[in-house]
Length: 270
Ligand SMILES: NC(=O)C1=CN([C@@H]2O[C@H](COP(=O)(O)OP(=O)(O)OC[C@H]3O[C@@H](n4cnc5c(N)ncnc54)[C@H](OP(=O)(O)O)[C@@H]3O)[C@@H](O)[C@H]2O)C=CC1
Ligand SMILES: O=C(O)[C@@H]1CCC=N1
Image 1 (cartoon, helix red, strand yellow):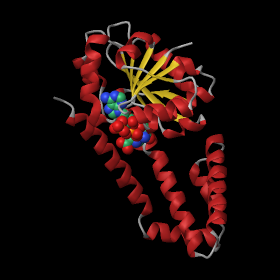
Image 2 (cartoon, rainbow, N blue to C red; image 1 turned 90 degrees about the horizontal axis):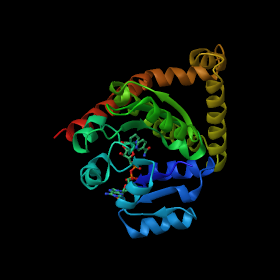
Image 3 (cartoon, rainbow, N blue to C red; image 1 turned 90 degrees about the vertical axis):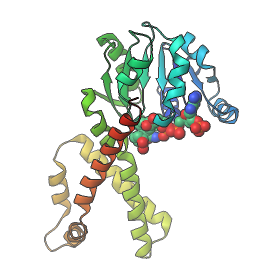
């Protein structure tokens, strides 16, 4: 089985480890590095068989090194990796905004790098991951990464220049859905429903709507129209959403997220 080492096991790193375990990956083939002992012990306890290792060990033993630190923390990680990696290594970066060229400039010549933007639904095997090979990554490297990520959800390959937009849409996307659900549960509270009931009503509605969308039988516009009866309740709700500019707010929000991804890349240009 492919040995995977995660450099930085925070939220997305843990989601990947947990998703791979659920997908049948052997815990002994999953390694991770962590800055703090306490976090390392916490993960080892939560996922028996999985081991915290040093960066050196990770580089020696892993077929795939997955970088999952915050973009702001990348420099020391790269500095540690420089003497450890060569063309037979494979680096997968999950970091928002960081281009493959940043790695290629720092690491030894020929080290293959694949940039990936996943999302946290990896935890439940429903990730959307977009992958882009860097300069030294071959079709075989791409196939390895695709296979790996296919255990935790869907995978698409995109040109690297689309990764900032992808990050804004599917990388950050789950947060926007959670935010909407949270706001709708509050609306239930406003209308006098108990919180647990409001939660159940909205979450199951979200699951049902997501399933209809995923089955792809109809365009979202048609699905929405089918709920919107003439002179009914839904159109009154929609009028308020339009009045408050929710569509424009979503366009602006996702554009702002894209801009931040571009900025994160620029902050590490030099
Ligand atoms: N969260 C998400 O939904 C997504 C995140 N990403 C990307 O994944 C990366 C991680 O994000 P996220 O998981 O949210 O962030 P977290 O801060 O939760 O995770 C990063 C982890 O890396 C650890 N770390 C930092 N430096 C080192 C180091 N030198 N060696 C070992 N571990 C280190 C951090 O420790 P400490 O806590 O001590 O700082 C932390 O546990 C980011 O680059 C982000 O852009 C991509 C897609 C989705
Ligand atoms: O907020 C972030 O920067 C990360 C990248 C995509 C989702 N979370």
